[in-house]
Image (tube, rainbow, N blue to C red; front, side):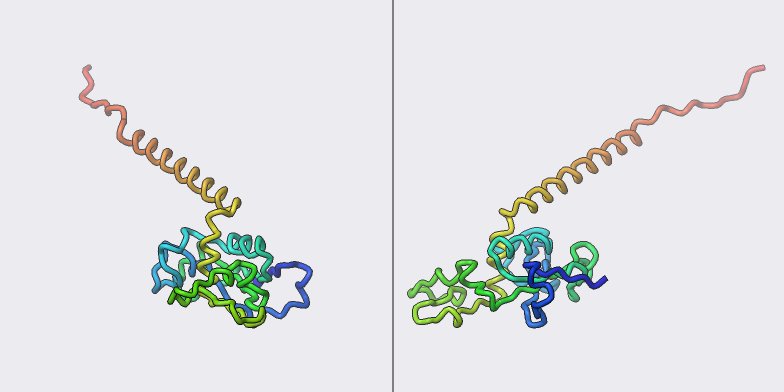
Amino acid sequence: PNTTHVWPMTQTFSLDYKRFTTIYPTYLDSKKSTKQGRRIAIADAVEQPFVTDISEVLQKFNIRHVIQPFKGYPRDIESRWYNPGRVLVDMDDGVPLKLGLALKFDENSDSDDEIPILDMEEDDLKVTKKQLCREIAKRLPGIASRIQRLAEDARKKEEEDEKAKEAQRKKSVRPPKRRQGKKKK
């Protein structure tokens, strides 16, 4: 099914999201290679980001976005099955100011990641897709639902490992077979 969830919900029918910037979880995943679609450095990336996690970060900063949970990243076939979805972000919604990116200007820095705000109007502030991905990835580890989900996944994996070890022990400790010899008459 082609389902779309708009945030905030009050703008469901009035929001035209055709020109929004697309962010797939694969862009932020530290387990993916650049060939598979990771768009930021491994040092900045996080493990297993979900669409709901990205949405929660954007909601926290009151940034308009749309969730499409059944869309898959074309380059990474595995993500279509195990981590589907994408988020469309309204880059004209004051993203630099809401995320605090416009406040990090250093005159002595040669980095193009920082946005100068000295002589700029609020309308002139722009943020790149890569900067947005970095900022989302930076804030993902602190999301409560993500922490809870990862703890639950770790607990399930631990239980599966215990079951596998128990099954292995049962296989290795078998009662000796009785030898059937000739019966005495």
